[in-house]
Length: 304
Image 1: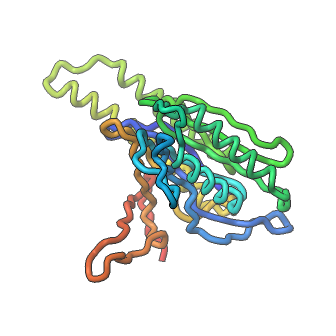
Image 2: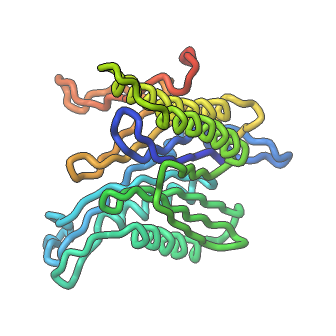
């Protein structure tokens, strides 16, 4: 099990969908306690969505070229790691090769993407032995035009595959995993901050030259406080000894619309053991550059 949360965020003047997750993979012992397998498990993914004309396929290889439409959706998971990662690989493969056979150029919609994910989950688990009582919890998110959305797809042996969708707004906070306590505390903090933000926004603006600037700055501080309080609550869950299946490093995936294109950015808490430094071009520098920050409101010392 793990913890994933998704919310709409508008700090720094850029509206975006932000997903947070821990990085622990664990297994449950016979006595009900959890054994940690790894604290470096990636649970947030940015999946390309590409649409092609039928005549865009290459001979011999069967590769698709020159998509007429591209976007990106995010996905986070909780539950059984093997099943989740297998399903996400399948989802990525299918979303990256959507084909329009009739010569037109249809665009994928929120419900269409989530329905495809649901059907792929149904197909996968229909061929699954059921051993190990697998559990799959997925949160997908993206933009339909400029409208942010969040979809939830779940599977367990008792209920099968279920899915829901919603348009994301300032009040949206979707969570999966060991999320009951986090949901309660995070929502309480957000409600308090939003209530105070509303009271500030309703006050008359000072007639001084800096009045409008001061108001904008104060509202921006509320937005940042909401972001940091959500991160702080996630970090408390990660560091709590009570939640043995939540731990590792706090990860963040954000989707935003930039110049008409959906872009994705990965960040994680400043803990170095998620990163490697290696050049893929011998004799030159070409390699991954991690984007890290001190998440939450406290200053944490890096783990040795």
